[in-house]
Length: 240
Image (cartoon, rainbow, N blue to C red; front, side, top):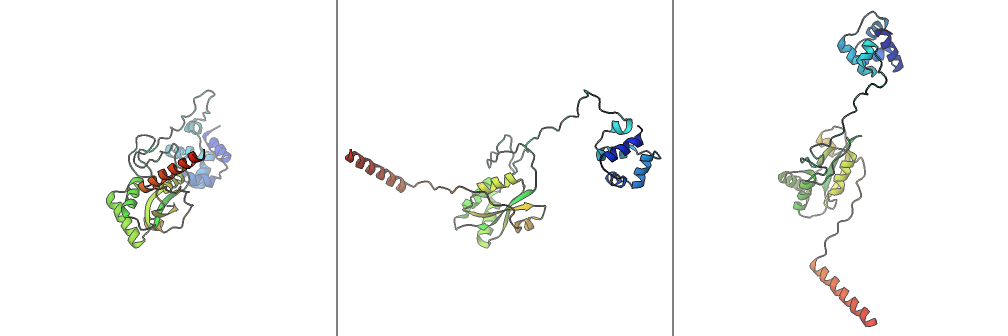
């Protein structure tokens, strides 16, 4: 089988017309027709494009060499290496868990669409220092930027883009760790829009369920609990 015949055979096996193969390689249908009829021969650069388009090796296209039995297979893709920067807070990471925000680093490459986390304002009238501390820890904001964002959100109700380009698991993790008693959050799909357009997009998924924060028992509550315990113990002793 000659070069021209191999091109035609593989093209047909891929279910491509001459015109479709020409579009993939960047030539006209007439050029493909001339290759397959043996009138002309593609140059080296075009052969490389043909190999990619037809998913065959250059050895097969040029020499007709089939893989021999027992021949080592092509090397597998290198194993996935987690990023050296946390996708959540953008701090440098050397281990499997981000030392800044605590995010467990991914072990597989992200798949599917990207997402962004946006605040639609704040909740309550608590001091902005608590909000700023959350943004500094989980989003990696500087103190000055966090303070500015919290002031704008609390005074003007502005929407603020916290993080973008996150996987679905990453954005859910971030939303579940930010205190939703302090922020009104929404998750939107990140399709490459500007930051301003992302901030006003409609939500793409529901927020994860968050366990209610339990405030630690104060001194008075502790004393009361001890007193109740003592009274119950005395009552039980008096009965028996």
